[in-house]
Length: 265
Image (cartoon, rainbow, N blue to C red; front, top):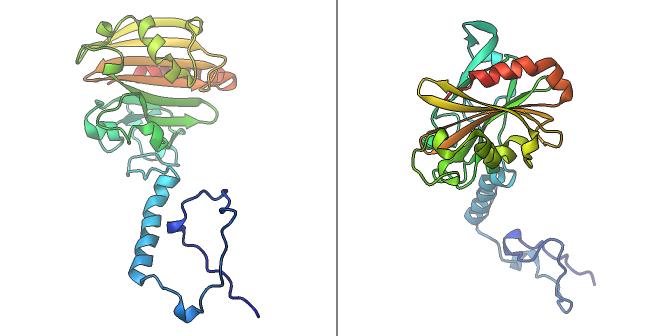
């Protein structure tokens, strides 16, 4: 006598992992005829389906961009050209660009970049979206890159991570060497060795002080050459990083330095 196939077990009641085995003594009896099987209400099925759809972006760690967020097109197609040098375009961040700007944890920043560069998406786990308005660790604000020239990113760090003094200036946090020792891993993407620092300097723009760095980082995940510029404003230290590998550095050193010089908060 043929037996009726077992009905699939609804995923909502499975409590063990997909690789776990059922208990050794577990046995099943033939399922009842179709007309006697319990049926889930259609509203319940629809609700479970919609719940799964709503969770999908979280499972895939996708971030829905705003109209001014990361775009898979060259920035020259939507950013204005720099009036003094049309070979660059001008980017100024606004509250619609990142969670930290919307929360007021970061003041708007600006810099220039070549029109052929593209803005890339920042993974949700790195964007600070999950911890605003009070993040304990640094997060990535925005990222841009060009396959032939390199990449840049803006990293923000809570001031409390570096000093207990509210609204401290960058000078009050410490020397350029002290600051890069704390933020170096966020420049390189992994570790920081003081021997990798080739040059540091201090720059004043109005009433804002910036620390600038030139690093040679052969083991960095970001690239063998890194430029960085940092300042403190409000309750955040903002760090601009330009990175390149050896091949990119040979053709874009001047461009990356121009981008670094243009960075302001």
